[in-house]
Amino acid sequence: MQESPILEVKNLSISFSENEVIHSVSYHLNKNEILGIVGESGSGKSVSSLAILGLLPEKIAKINFGSITYNGTDLTTLLPKLFQKIRGNKIAMIFQEPMSSLNPSMTCGKQVQEILLQHTNLSKKEAQNETLLLFEKVKLPDVNITYNKYPHEISGGQKQRVMIAMAIACKPDILIADEPTTALDVTVQKDIISLLKALQVETKMSIIFITHDLALISKIANRVLVMYKGNIVEQGIVSDIFKNPQHNYTKALINSRPSLDTRLKTLPTIQDFLDDSISNDIISPQQRKETHKKLYSKPPLLEVINVEKEYISKSGWFTKPQHFKAVNDVSFKLYEGETLGLVGESGCGKSTLGNAILQLDKATSGQILYNGVDITKLSKSDTRKLRKDIQIIFQDPYSSLNPRIPVGEAIMEPMIVHKLYNSDKERKEKVIDILNRVGLSEDYFNRYPHEFSGGQRQRIGIARTIALQPKLIVCDESVSALDISVQAQVLNLLNELKDTFGFTYIFISHDLAVVKYMSDQLLVMNQGKIEELDDADVIYALPKKEYTKKLIEAIPKGL
Image (cartoon, rainbow, N blue to C red; front, side, top):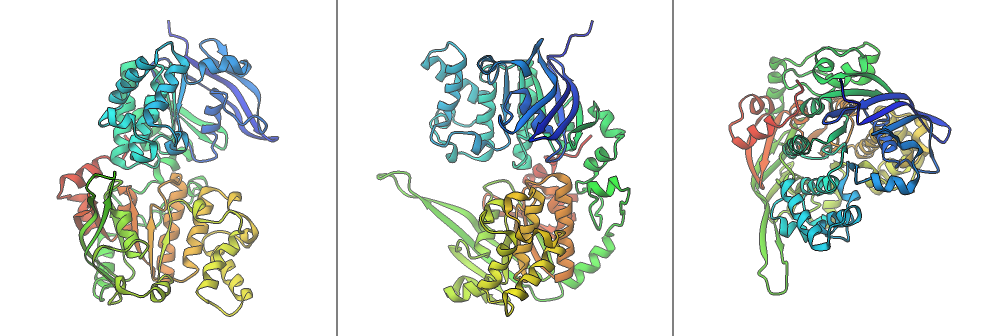
């Protein structure tokens, strides 16, 4: 006889202020199983999971009908006091952004210890020992030292491990992992996936793993359900869904990620699949060769020569200052119209190098020649003029936009600073033209950043950057936090703008699949140094260094 599920969701319908966002959703979670829930932002995957824990915003969200049954108890009818005994104890959650989920004023150890003291009968000393054992279990380095560190003192991957230790502290029956690896390096992501799988095998807990990346689901889940606009459009065994997807949306999720084998001229988006209007035009190796021949026949636009960036840290009054080279003797050339991919794990020095090129953080030594002029020696006024030519697209457009200023004014602002065009009327016309070019309409001019989705905000960030008609744009992790299909739209847009305006890009990312698709040359960084520098396709096909091989092997490739 088949065992009854540990969790059963039946006909669940949720509304946010009269607007129904989850439409009669039904699924189950078996004991000792990993269930994947996949879909983009707004698909309802996180909302339906927050409902399981009773964490929906009280005054806004409402469960219209349906039930969520855990071990025979309908959680939708539980009183708050009874829910507290289940939440964090029997059903735990790992959130996407550990920095905003961890208390910045408490050490990592104390935060896990607090959970144990709240839900168990352990003494303070026993809870401390148990925390150290949990830190060992999630493979944190130097557990005694990490115990006394604050969240800001450890890396993103380590913060996520602290969150996992906190979630499994009370040996829950169910663990909900909501996008736990989205902003992490591919190698760290691989480690976290392996860790969760190992913990599941050891503890026999059931896991709901939520992500927008179907390839990632294939590495961890037994079954998967695909959500789209608040509905479950497909569910089944992972291998069946991958080999024979039935719904166009599922097909789109599988195919929107850049292929590692063929180079499409434009990446297919969700809408392309839903409209059945996919273009299969590819860039052949011969076409690529001819493009490169033209690119590299001209003198370089940017030349980085033996650049170093050293930081000096002093941890105490009586300790010797420590010297740390974040960028160590880096040299390369960048040509007009080229996209140079800069890839490596967090802490490898890629963003520091980008900041040195942008003159946001001056290099300690070496030369950076832009159009033959060493920009490290420019005066403040000349550096300010250079800002017009060398721009950046940030990873998080929301924090780089002023929430109090309408987006039209935010795009006009740098035009005014750099005295572009003759009047505000002319500037406004240019802004509307730019908004149209990045796929947004004139109606958006007077709207505020909070009124837009993540993908739309990234388009606004791009619009603000191109408003100055720069020559060189540094894209620093500018698509890493986006859904796969939105990522495809933004990558297509960047390539389209490059062709139209002749931009040159330095494309910084930890995602090798995306960097390979976008780049002409690829620069792999490790611990401040260049590991490899060559044609992106050559490096992917024949990596010379073990470090590069490790990065390539960590890319989630699906079944």
